[in-house]
Length: 114
Length: 108
Image 1 (cartoon, each protein chain N blue to C red):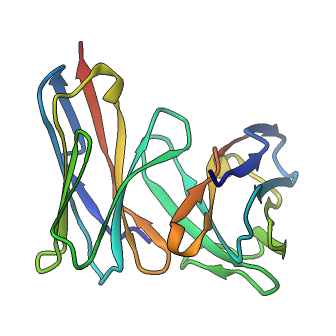
Image 2 (image 1 turned 90 degrees about the vertical axis):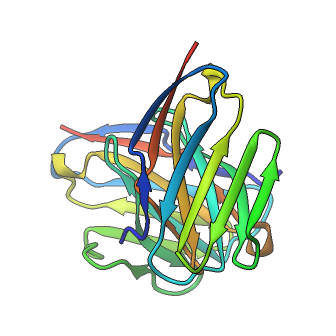
């Protein structure tokens, strides 16, 4: 079946540093990918829609300069949390749009900023 | 931007009982999907119901959709301890917008 590989599964970084999270579709091409954030005991909040070859579309309230999204190929989208702070600590999940086949989610990345 | 509300927020039942979770959404959708999430892990797709469908079954799962009320329900029959997880509905508008979720605990 279709697999979306997300790396790293967890990361701890120092406040002020940047962290890159990768989301890769392994056996299909994904023109569109989505990035979500989930705080403890809460639901998934859509952050942005990542489109291959064009700029990402951010949801209201999400800082595009802080959460940089790059979708340079049909199989890879990256989310970079720039100048991370403790309040950015969260669970980040990507998903790939497979058209008529629905959405496939990555396994998530737990980011802890210390 | 959250679209859906779910109730109850938390549900605790005994193994063998049925569990019902409800979801409401705000905007028009192409379909509605239900997902399961074990603590701190990724999502597992459970079932999809299209906007022109009213009910769908998959194993022990039964989903209903009422587009006039913008609501859906998920019924898990004969629950098992392994069903303990969080359950989320997600309305598909071209992107998935998730509800608040219901945390289900099934006691053995």
